[in-house]
Image 1: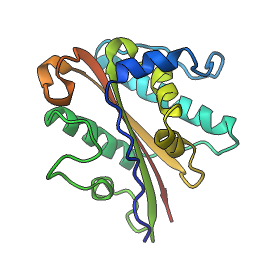
Image 2 (image 1 turned 90 degrees about the vertical axis):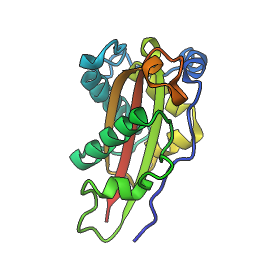
Image 3 (image 1 turned 135 degrees about the vertical axis):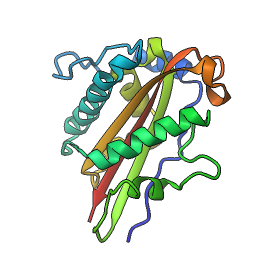
Image 4 (image 1 turned 180 degrees about the horizontal axis):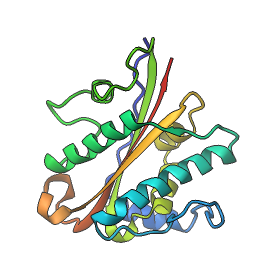
Length: 192
């Protein structure tokens, strides 16, 4: 069985990072990714942001001659759980202290059940609700070596993304003073 892959890149102070990268963002006009520029301003818009982000991730892969990643429901359940756990415990990381490990968290939702092995990856991001479009998040990831590597890793075949809208002022912890924000968890996998 292969050891789970995980990115060690953490995104803190995303608001500044997005502003810096927005000027060099790839052009997504005409990509067929609906809602790429949607700024989720409440919880009702996060499903559209999820679809747009998955679409843009696949667009980046296709531009580099890699196959598109298929949506996987087990990964989606795991990504949603991770996003909700980060909010509930006011942290921003791939693992909460005392919480489930990265691979265990993903496999407990049934991913890789009955497989001989697997490879996993995860990208995290959060940004103020005014700077959290799919275009901005994917651009930020593509300008970060660890996140870019996950997006473009040839062996990955599946992905899922969870985006949740929250009020950072009500959460505290890593999100204190953030006001309305969107948290993104993008998970990648391959089963052997």
